[in-house]
Image (cartoon, rainbow, N blue to C red; front, side, top):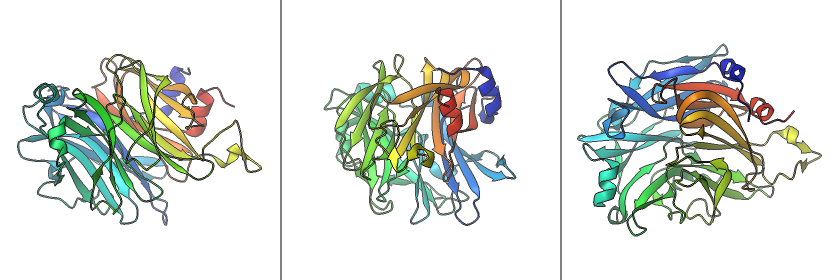
Length: 387
């Protein structure tokens, strides 16, 4: 485990959201990045929940900051409150952005939960108080199409089967086929009111959304990434929070309609009650091919990167898997923040071997701030002991 303080100083974390003296707190980060093909302009959108206290039930609305790279540095806009992402009498939670490249549409999914009703209350009473909503943008978040309120997606018959549910939190993805994936989980009443991850998916650029089958293994907050194997076959990978000693992983061969190969990722440790984590896939570096043959027994054209506290709400770590179809292929962690750490979201800078992480962290509590940090694949591999 690489954990030198010099790494953390070199990373130059940028605080984007800070807790205030009156208790106002920002939690639950979500991050997405864009790169314009013509100009090469890079943009980040950072989302979070604004709360009156760190408690879940005191969430109010979603906020956003926009970062644009200029002369090598990122300039961030002021904090913007997303008033269009609110339902009267509800709190807005769990930001989950996903970008549809063909129509140039950014969807920001979230849930709206009835004020005064906690998650524990919903589970105890087996009565869902959450509503699935989104807003959309056609200019990468400079403006939003919904000014007077979000679009709600009815969950139909699932309302009777779920005590409650949520999306993400953190980013969704678009697969090679064009299918949009929003990670989600539900407390299933028929399964003993236990949480199970699943995907929401769309094959028509976000016009209609479908609910995938629940993962059988108990699983909670999750993110998903597309793995392309050496034969060009796509697999959807789910990495989910668990109350056991390690994360739950699952693979789908039908792009998220169902997940079959469920396993416990022994190298990705969870402390009691677990914590949210982030996972992304990215193209394997060309340097890893020798005469067209993959080195080290790698079985994928894409690698995985994962972020999660390395101990109970402390020391944020980044892990690398160069053989993502191998459940034991994880390397690391590399510590990118020493001290209290919580939720995080990763993104890959398209066309580069660089990444960014938006994470909860602090000196005494992980609720103190949400910071943005950039790093390279070389940084991660060096920290994992590779030349």
